[in-house]
Image: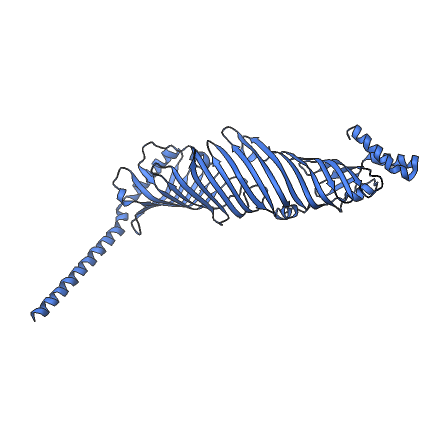
Length: 449
């Protein structure tokens, strides 16, 4: 009987201990839930706004601030607006605290989560003017950014996610930035008082005025003192390849320069992808260089100078039939038709929106043609082409005048060619037609027509 009493007593003591532990746990949980409501968040919110405004030099507003102790101690800020014209907005920021450092001189934020930040074009100036203190009181070790949006005029930039590791001194250790659609990735690390990054992309369209789709892209980029260098740029697009090296410097004005090389890019595929009518088919290869200078980055394209020595293999020029134009001495301009060629080569020169084609040469089994072409900003064509048919017994180059527009080109013999043909025919009969055309072509060259 005494044994049974002892067993019951032990059971009661154990039950009481368990109840006590349960009550203590419940009290602690209740305390954890109540503590955030006992902290004067309104006061802290105003203090944070004041400190942030002083650091950034622009007004900072925070819609709400609250503390959560579960699942891990963190401070949450919602509805952040930076700048008098909402240059920066952030939907939510969560700072996960390292509780072991709460009472240290330097407190540690183990993880800073930034959700849906939106940066307008003027935000760059605010970021550049941040006033940093030599005395570090808060250390951020890891930053996670989700659904970031950069808004720049005339640029459709992708939504980005980022993972960033920081040192205790506040410097970047490494960063990984990805587009939300998974098509673009940038990995960056510090290097030589600047930064180095590797860019990789798959089925990606860069945010430029002329949409180009890269099947694959790999490139190295370095940044130092407001200067950007692009190297090892290797891309596959439209069944061909593009190699490029470039530099962009904005320490004073914006300066852009670079060189590039193309290999067997299918012109028809490129035109279709860009939503343009197919005017030229064939595989494009060549090499060239470009440069530009402007006070504003948005105007670099308007000031672009480009020289490109190119050749197109096994293609068709749509809109012009040079064989027909060279075989018929017509008085009216001829448009339509097509010219098949084995190779079309030349030098493309672009100055802003003005285009010129020099040393143009078109060759095929039937045709040998050379010429010079100009394209005005409103797409009007002008130029001279000398076209000769290889099948004729006497190879005579017929001087042709090019006119019309890119969408509706027109070609006809020059006035001198018509006059020469008429004169030669009148003097020597049909046999003199070619002789008269040849003489007219010589006069055209002599007088620079």
